Length: 434
Image (cartoon, rainbow, N blue to C red; front, top):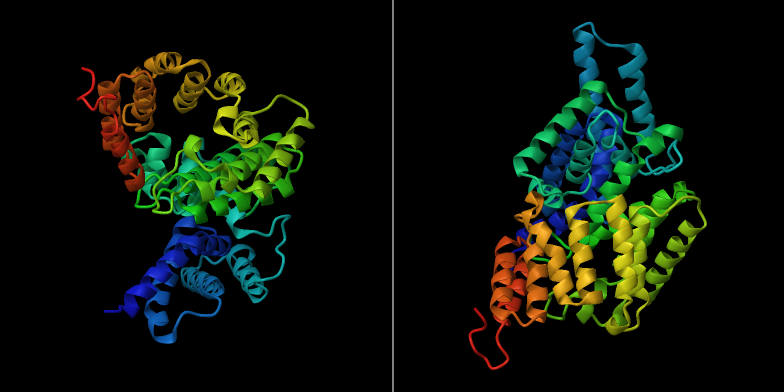
């Protein structure tokens, strides 16, 4: 039997996944409080759930949600002003004028806004990346509010306990509210000061879209596309910033593979097995153009430009066998110096294994076994499983893949790793080596 109400809820859930950050951003710009803005957004969602089954989905559902959020934000300001007036604490120079300005802004909601970008999402990112907050709190808060990531997904991205991430998010919201930080894009030196955190957030959002941490789907394309859009906006704002262009180049090139990353049955297709004729040549060209522009700017390449250079090596290779793994290893050597994270070192080990043989790659992973941050990171045993399989050490490879499958939280990735474990057999079909 058909379930119209259930179908509508699923449709609204998909729409909300795309529009939620925009709704929160609009409300935050008006009320200047991320916590309140989130509450307003939830009220808007509940209103849609109540009204749309009877009224039908509007022709422009995103605009409906934004308008509803704007009205509720203004109602919140008016209510707050009334309470403050009754208590004798109303400031004519602050709250009332701000409410009036917000109301006037609501009347021209589609007009250009008064900063160089005119984008509520980018305002939201820069606000959450305020220097008042510690760097880790900036990224966690923005990923939660703007990226729509769960606390579990953020914790996974940072390799931190969920409780730690949850505390960071709550404290960050309180700090911004107490300081009455406006939802705006800063200018001049203040913009540059926050740029590093903003780039990190956009990058992590893209990564979650490129390879989802949890859930049934291996990718969340809408999330990656939103990060890519924000990267393009930022590059138009700061065309002379090498790392902005580097991140844009990296995302353009990585996004070019989307069509080739899934088999017809929805199963993941690994990089070396992808049909490269399905890679989007326009996105590759855009990425290579952005990367070339970084070469015209002064100074050495930063982490994003170096990662884009690595992605470019894959994009330029017509076939997997044509990949210049020696050059990629050299780029990873440079990247480790500027970004010495254990995940980068693990990726370098993969490149070493491709350039100089699986034994060399396996040796490069050995020190990482003692790194606390990688103890529950499924890609470490997955990489070792691949290298062990290439060395013919099938039982060890099977054990490594089984460990990786047990740690993976994404259903598609878990199934892929389990299949690789099952495939680790001796050529004669025996039980494998001890």
